Image (cartoon, rainbow, N blue to C red; front, side, top):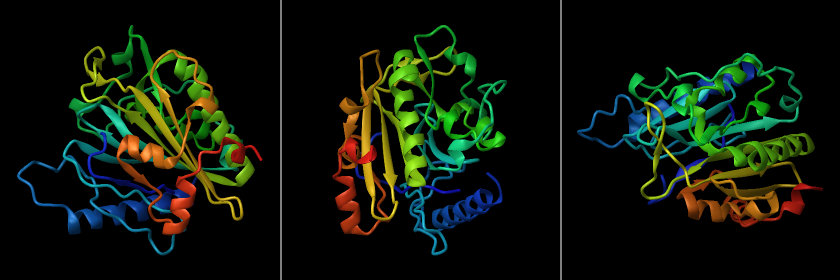
Length: 289
Protein backbone atom coordinates (compact mmCIF):
# COMPACT_ATOMS: atom_id res chain seq x y z
CA UNK A 1 0.00 0.00 0.00
CA UNK A 2 1.20 3.46 -0.84
CA UNK A 3 0.05 6.28 1.33
CA UNK A 4 0.16 9.99 1.93
CA UNK A 5 1.33 11.71 5.08
CA UNK A 6 -1.26 13.09 7.43
CA UNK A 7 -0.29 14.42 10.81
CA UNK A 8 -3.12 15.66 13.00
CA UNK A 9 -2.51 19.14 14.43
CA UNK A 10 -3.85 20.47 17.69
CA UNK A 11 -7.58 21.06 17.48
CA UNK A 12 -8.49 19.82 14.06
CA UNK A 13 -11.78 18.34 13.03
CA UNK A 14 -12.68 16.21 13.31
CA UNK A 15 -2.89 -4.49 -8.17
CA UNK A 16 -1.20 -7.27 -6.83
CA UNK A 17 1.84 -8.40 -4.91
CA UNK A 18 3.61 -5.05 -4.65
CA UNK A 19 0.62 -3.34 -3.08
CA UNK A 20 0.04 -6.27 -0.72
CA UNK A 21 3.67 -6.23 0.42
CA UNK A 22 3.60 -2.51 1.04
CA UNK A 23 0.34 -2.87 2.94
CA UNK A 24 1.84 -5.49 5.25
CA UNK A 25 4.86 -3.26 5.89
CA UNK A 26 2.61 -0.29 6.59
CA UNK A 27 0.38 -2.10 9.07
CA UNK A 28 3.30 -3.67 10.93
CA UNK A 29 4.87 -0.24 11.29
CA UNK A 30 1.69 1.33 12.60
CA UNK A 31 1.05 -1.50 15.03
CA UNK A 32 4.59 -1.25 16.39
CA UNK A 33 4.32 2.50 16.83
CA UNK A 34 0.98 2.20 18.59
CA UNK A 35 2.40 -0.22 21.15
CA UNK A 36 5.41 2.01 21.73
CA UNK A 37 3.79 5.41 21.90
CA UNK A 38 0.06 5.09 22.62
CA UNK A 39 -0.82 6.95 25.83
CA UNK A 40 -2.25 5.05 28.76
CA UNK A 41 -5.98 5.42 29.19
CA UNK A 42 -8.83 4.02 31.22
CA UNK A 43 -10.92 3.88 28.06
CA UNK A 44 -11.33 0.61 26.20
CA UNK A 45 -9.22 1.21 23.10
CA UNK A 46 -9.16 -2.36 21.83
CA UNK A 47 -11.52 -1.35 19.04
CA UNK A 48 -9.48 1.72 18.10
CA UNK A 49 -6.27 0.45 16.42
CA UNK A 50 -4.90 3.91 15.62
CA UNK A 51 -1.18 4.64 15.54
CA UNK A 52 0.21 7.53 17.53
CA UNK A 53 3.20 8.18 15.31
CA UNK A 54 4.88 6.59 12.30
CA UNK A 55 7.94 7.37 10.24
CA UNK A 56 8.50 6.62 6.57
CA UNK A 57 10.13 3.17 6.20
CA UNK A 58 13.61 3.39 4.71
CA UNK A 59 12.68 1.09 1.83
CA UNK A 60 9.67 3.14 0.75
CA UNK A 61 9.85 6.42 -1.13
CA UNK A 62 6.26 7.28 -0.25
CA UNK A 63 5.26 8.71 3.12
CA UNK A 64 2.82 6.91 5.37
CA UNK A 65 -0.09 8.15 7.45
CA UNK A 66 0.87 9.78 10.75
CA UNK A 67 -1.95 10.39 13.20
CA UNK A 68 -2.64 10.88 16.89
CA UNK A 69 -4.87 8.27 18.55
CA UNK A 70 -8.49 9.08 19.27
CA UNK A 71 -10.80 6.63 20.98
CA UNK A 72 -13.51 6.93 18.31
CA UNK A 73 -11.16 6.23 15.38
CA UNK A 74 -10.42 2.95 13.62
CA UNK A 75 -7.61 2.70 11.08
CA UNK A 76 -8.60 0.51 8.13
CA UNK A 77 -6.44 -0.80 5.29
CA UNK A 78 -8.18 -1.90 2.09
CA UNK A 79 -6.88 -2.87 -1.31
CA UNK A 80 -5.50 0.30 -2.89
CA UNK A 81 -6.39 2.78 -0.14
CA UNK A 82 -6.49 3.34 3.60
CA UNK A 83 -8.80 5.37 5.79
CA UNK A 84 -9.43 6.52 9.31
CA UNK A 85 -13.02 5.76 10.31
CA UNK A 86 -14.75 7.87 12.95
CA UNK A 87 -17.20 5.69 14.86
CA UNK A 88 -18.87 8.79 16.30
CA UNK A 89 -19.57 10.46 12.94
CA UNK A 90 -19.97 7.09 11.16
CA UNK A 91 -17.87 8.52 8.33
CA UNK A 92 -14.20 8.42 7.41
CA UNK A 93 -12.12 11.32 8.72
CA UNK A 94 -9.77 10.92 5.79
CA UNK A 95 -9.12 8.48 2.95
CA UNK A 96 -5.69 8.25 1.29
CA UNK A 97 -4.31 6.53 -1.79
CA UNK A 98 -1.79 6.78 -4.59
CA UNK A 99 -3.06 6.70 -8.16
CA UNK A 100 -0.65 5.74 -10.93
CA UNK A 101 -0.92 6.25 -14.66
CA UNK A 102 -1.09 2.49 -15.18
CA UNK A 103 -3.94 2.16 -12.69
CA UNK A 104 -6.04 4.73 -14.58
CA UNK A 105 -6.08 2.33 -17.55
CA UNK A 106 -7.83 -0.41 -15.57
CA UNK A 107 -10.84 -2.12 -17.13
CA UNK A 108 -12.64 -3.52 -14.10
CA UNK A 109 -16.34 -2.60 -14.17
CA UNK A 110 -18.35 -1.52 -11.14
CA UNK A 111 -21.41 -3.20 -12.62
CA UNK A 112 -22.85 -5.65 -10.11
CA UNK A 113 -20.70 -4.30 -7.27
CA UNK A 114 -22.95 -3.27 -4.40
CA UNK A 115 -22.36 -1.02 -1.43
CA UNK A 116 -21.86 -3.13 1.68
CA UNK A 117 -21.17 -3.00 5.40
CA UNK A 118 -17.52 -3.07 6.42
CA UNK A 119 -16.75 -5.89 8.84
CA UNK A 120 -13.47 -4.17 9.71
CA UNK A 121 -15.47 -2.16 12.27
CA UNK A 122 -17.66 -3.45 15.13
CA UNK A 123 -21.21 -4.29 14.10
CA UNK A 124 -22.80 -1.31 15.87
CA UNK A 125 -20.78 1.03 13.63
CA UNK A 126 -21.47 -0.77 10.35
CA UNK A 127 -23.49 1.66 8.24
CA UNK A 128 -25.59 -0.13 5.61
CA UNK A 129 -26.48 1.01 2.11
CA UNK A 130 -30.17 1.12 3.04
CA UNK A 131 -29.40 3.69 5.74
CA UNK A 132 -29.29 6.19 2.85
CA UNK A 133 -32.65 5.17 1.38
CA UNK A 134 -35.19 7.90 0.80
CA UNK A 135 -32.99 10.77 1.97
CA UNK A 136 -31.67 13.88 0.24
CA UNK A 137 -28.03 12.79 0.52
CA UNK A 138 -26.39 10.27 -1.74
CA UNK A 139 -23.62 7.78 -1.06
CA UNK A 140 -20.53 9.84 -1.77
CA UNK A 141 -17.34 7.87 -2.44
CA UNK A 142 -14.20 9.37 -0.96
CA UNK A 143 -11.85 7.03 -2.81
CA UNK A 144 -13.74 6.82 -6.13
CA UNK A 145 -14.61 3.67 -8.03
CA UNK A 146 -13.08 5.27 -11.11
CA UNK A 147 -9.65 5.15 -9.44
CA UNK A 148 -9.97 1.48 -8.49
CA UNK A 149 -10.58 -0.10 -11.91
CA UNK A 150 -7.15 -1.75 -11.83
CA UNK A 151 -8.30 -4.50 -9.43
CA UNK A 152 -11.53 -6.37 -8.79
CA UNK A 153 -10.72 -6.45 -5.08
CA UNK A 154 -10.01 -2.70 -5.00
CA UNK A 155 -13.29 -2.06 -6.81
CA UNK A 156 -15.19 -4.11 -4.25
CA UNK A 157 -13.36 -2.55 -1.30
CA UNK A 158 -14.10 1.03 -2.35
CA UNK A 159 -17.81 0.17 -2.02
CA UNK A 160 -17.49 -0.48 1.70
CA UNK A 161 -19.64 2.02 3.55
CA UNK A 162 -16.61 3.13 5.59
CA UNK A 163 -15.46 4.88 2.37
CA UNK A 164 -18.77 6.72 2.02
CA UNK A 165 -20.13 10.05 3.31
CA UNK A 166 -23.55 11.71 3.00
CA UNK A 167 -23.06 13.92 -0.04
CA UNK A 168 -25.40 16.22 -1.90
CA UNK A 169 -26.54 14.58 -5.13
CA UNK A 170 -25.64 17.57 -7.31
CA UNK A 171 -22.16 17.80 -5.84
CA UNK A 172 -21.64 14.05 -6.14
CA UNK A 173 -22.70 13.73 -9.76
CA UNK A 174 -21.17 16.90 -11.17
CA UNK A 175 -18.55 18.93 -9.31
CA UNK A 176 -16.95 16.22 -7.16
CA UNK A 177 -16.83 13.91 -10.18
CA UNK A 178 -15.16 16.61 -12.27
CA UNK A 179 -12.36 16.71 -9.71
CA UNK A 180 -12.07 12.92 -9.65
CA UNK A 181 -11.70 12.86 -13.43
CA UNK A 182 -9.09 15.62 -13.26
CA UNK A 183 -7.05 13.62 -10.73
CA UNK A 184 -6.98 10.66 -13.12
CA UNK A 185 -5.79 12.92 -15.90
CA UNK A 186 -3.04 14.34 -13.67
CA UNK A 187 -1.93 10.80 -12.76
CA UNK A 188 -1.62 9.98 -16.46
CA UNK A 189 0.34 13.17 -17.12
CA UNK A 190 2.75 12.91 -14.18
CA UNK A 191 2.98 9.14 -13.72
CA UNK A 192 1.34 9.17 -10.30
CA UNK A 193 -0.34 11.44 -7.76
CA UNK A 194 -0.97 11.09 -4.05
CA UNK A 195 -4.48 11.97 -2.90
CA UNK A 196 -6.11 12.54 0.48
CA UNK A 197 -9.74 13.57 0.88
CA UNK A 198 -12.47 13.59 3.45
CA UNK A 199 -15.37 15.42 5.07
CA UNK A 200 -15.38 18.66 7.02
CA UNK A 201 -17.96 18.79 9.80
CA UNK A 202 -19.56 21.74 11.61
CA UNK A 203 -19.32 21.86 15.40
CA UNK A 204 -22.77 20.28 15.79
CA UNK A 205 -23.55 18.39 12.59
CA UNK A 206 -27.06 17.28 11.79
CA UNK A 207 -27.65 13.56 11.50
CA UNK A 208 -28.99 11.53 8.61
CA UNK A 209 -29.86 7.88 8.10
CA UNK A 210 -32.50 5.19 8.59
CA UNK A 211 -30.99 3.21 11.45
CA UNK A 212 -27.42 4.43 11.71
CA UNK A 213 -27.39 8.22 12.01
CA UNK A 214 -24.38 9.57 10.12
CA UNK A 215 -23.05 13.07 10.73
CA UNK A 216 -23.64 15.27 7.68
CA UNK A 217 -20.52 17.13 6.49
CA UNK A 218 -20.68 20.82 5.71
CA UNK A 219 -18.14 20.27 2.96
CA UNK A 220 -15.36 18.10 1.56
CA UNK A 221 -11.64 18.60 1.05
CA UNK A 222 -9.16 17.00 -1.29
CA UNK A 223 -5.40 17.53 -1.50
CA UNK A 224 -3.27 16.24 -4.36
CA UNK A 225 0.52 15.92 -4.56
CA UNK A 226 2.71 15.20 -7.58
CA UNK A 227 6.40 14.45 -7.10
CA UNK A 228 7.24 14.19 -10.79
CA UNK A 229 10.86 15.33 -11.01
CA UNK A 230 11.07 18.94 -12.14
CA UNK A 231 7.29 19.36 -11.93
CA UNK A 232 6.66 18.86 -8.21
CA UNK A 233 3.43 20.51 -7.13
CA UNK A 234 0.51 20.30 -4.75
CA UNK A 235 -3.00 21.70 -4.67
CA UNK A 236 -6.06 21.64 -2.43
CA UNK A 237 -9.80 21.88 -3.00
CA UNK A 238 -12.84 22.55 -0.85
CA UNK A 239 -16.46 22.02 -1.89
CA UNK A 240 -19.54 22.87 0.15
CA UNK A 241 -21.98 19.99 0.64
CA UNK A 242 -24.93 21.52 -1.19
CA UNK A 243 -26.34 21.96 -4.69
CA UNK A 244 -24.43 25.16 -5.47
CA UNK A 245 -22.60 25.58 -8.77
CA UNK A 246 -18.96 24.83 -7.88
CA UNK A 247 -16.54 24.85 -10.82
CA UNK A 248 -13.11 23.50 -10.00
CA UNK A 249 -11.36 26.85 -10.29
CA UNK A 250 -13.62 28.26 -7.56
CA UNK A 251 -12.87 25.32 -5.25
CA UNK A 252 -9.07 25.69 -5.45
CA UNK A 253 -7.20 26.22 -2.21
CA UNK A 254 -3.61 25.74 -1.13
CA UNK A 255 -2.76 22.71 0.97
CA UNK A 256 -1.95 25.20 3.73
CA UNK A 257 -5.55 26.44 3.51
CA UNK A 258 -6.89 22.90 3.85
CA UNK A 259 -4.62 22.27 6.83
CA UNK A 260 -6.11 25.29 8.59
CA UNK A 261 -9.60 24.10 7.74
CA UNK A 262 -9.16 20.49 8.87
CA UNK A 263 -6.43 20.62 11.50
CA UNK A 264 -4.39 18.01 9.59
CA UNK A 265 -0.76 18.38 8.55
CA UNK A 266 -0.35 16.80 5.12
CA UNK A 267 2.85 15.53 3.47
CA UNK A 268 4.98 16.27 6.54
CA UNK A 269 7.64 13.70 5.59
CA UNK A 270 8.74 15.93 2.71
CA UNK A 271 11.85 18.05 3.30
CA UNK A 272 10.75 21.22 5.11
CA UNK A 273 11.67 23.62 2.32
CA UNK A 274 9.89 21.53 -0.29
CA UNK A 275 6.85 21.03 1.92
CA UNK A 276 6.54 24.76 2.62
CA UNK A 277 6.88 25.62 -1.06
CA UNK A 278 4.46 23.03 -2.42
CA UNK A 279 1.81 23.49 0.25
CA UNK A 280 1.63 27.22 -0.43
CA UNK A 281 0.72 26.59 -4.10
CA UNK A 282 -2.83 27.14 -5.35
CA UNK A 283 -2.29 27.27 -9.11
CA UNK A 284 -4.65 25.13 -11.16
CA UNK A 285 -2.78 26.14 -14.34
CA UNK A 286 0.30 24.28 -13.12
CA UNK A 287 -1.71 21.05 -13.38
CA UNK A 288 -2.84 21.71 -16.93
CA UNK A 289 0.62 21.79 -18.50
